[in-house]
Image (cartoon, rainbow, N blue to C red):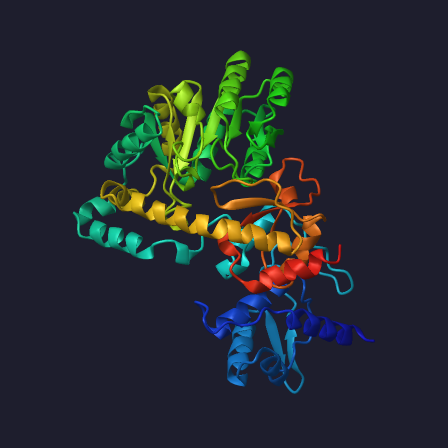
Length: 488
């Protein structure tokens, strides 16, 4: 068989696994086809020189009109993904070095996909249909309230427009910081507006804090497993990132004490409430022990509470925040609204001592001047008018109505859910096989998974994977898992 024939066969097989196109999706059939083929070319599932199925063949296989396929193919030609050869058909185009920076392609053996943090983040930004992205870290758009954001934006636009044209306050929009003072008080954390610095989401907050504390060669502690994005961010600072095993009620205290004595870390980043990726929460006993070890070995605790508002409250389910015990002396508290309002708002905040807030505000100012005053005004309006409380109540109720049902469905198709929690967005499921391999197979079918290896600083193979219970709405995802896990 010639190379061309092999490529044509590979193209046909790859596209045969294209998800069933949905006429009810938020994008047109043409957009769905274009996005799917682009992803397969980018991920090297379709190689340069592969012949695409004919327009008639593609249309019949996927139940669409030939005009739809023609428009999709023409768009892919215009974007440099395909080329049209008169009398022969459409072929995957050899991408130029400018179009695919840094990628080297060979005719016989393309390099395998590297499943790493950058891979997952890149694919999260590809705008896959939310119901086919159980590996994502966000609630689907149809769970959120776009009208709430739009109303806030309209209200802001009717205010003094000259205020919208200037820089904001480097420490953040004062009325929002005053509102955050009230929010923190509900969590039994006392903080004045002068102790609060707004940020462009939790990501910038962590970066500002890490740059303030860290020098090359310093050690940073994180949970293991934990939010994967910070591993690479801390490594670029020259830090030594060490994972502390996470148990259902918090970190392994004995291991934390042992490693703290050995490495003398600068700080320890921890999710106390609704930990990512397990959705477990810290017990009061362990919160006291962590604070005691931090005092003994003189390191700072960075408490990332981004999932704060998805927790029903301590009256319903126990949850202890270290900042409420320490009152921001040794603890720097981070929060935000990207998970509950809109990722695109990028509004987060840091709460700390007044002296540290000034230092972190100066560091923020030197790197980005200010954060978006417009986004902060929108969040202030939503918080101050009482809309936010009702909104998150609805989100929690919807998650509660989805979680138990999803656990049963996942266990039916072969996953083991041995860590359960009555709140939160995620399940930390055991697939019983290398989830990197499972993730590659899922990507070939347009499904985004989050393998467990990415959530550990060691990046070692894992049978675990993070499942977003709100993004499992497509029966094809369950069918894929049942088919693949049944082979093991």
